[in-house]
Image 1 (tube, rainbow, N blue to C red):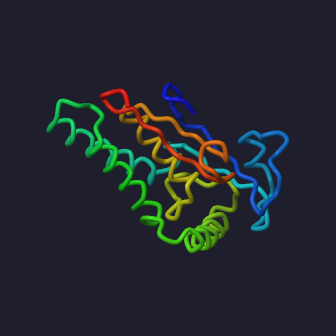
Image 2: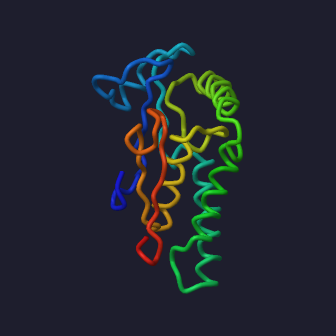
Length: 177
């Protein structure tokens, strides 16, 4: 997603789990919701929908307060300090800094199974993810950055990150870098 692409409610990120090859066609959100629930489902989706995700709304409000505070203290609308604070907010919500990726993956798998079982769906609200992998963290960062008018790209895949399931954000600061 580019700097100009704003993530709106209804956006979802789908992932084929368990080493399954990439999907030939991307199912619609309606099709995903209509699939019978199974913990063994080979796809999962993360949904951005503030109308049904109070945790995402709360995170957005925290980010906004943080940005207003930052912008009241500087002439810059986007600075390194704001970006660092936003990254820390995302990391803290999604299980903290990643020290041991394998441990985070196991924790994510457990959290994901529990969440999907409780909501009886493979479509998980973004704000409800309390443990996040790189793709989840990058998506949440992009959503929050978009809300703050912080120019942000989200890139995924081996070409950009060195791994198939990797994702990262690129932010333009006031100086254009």
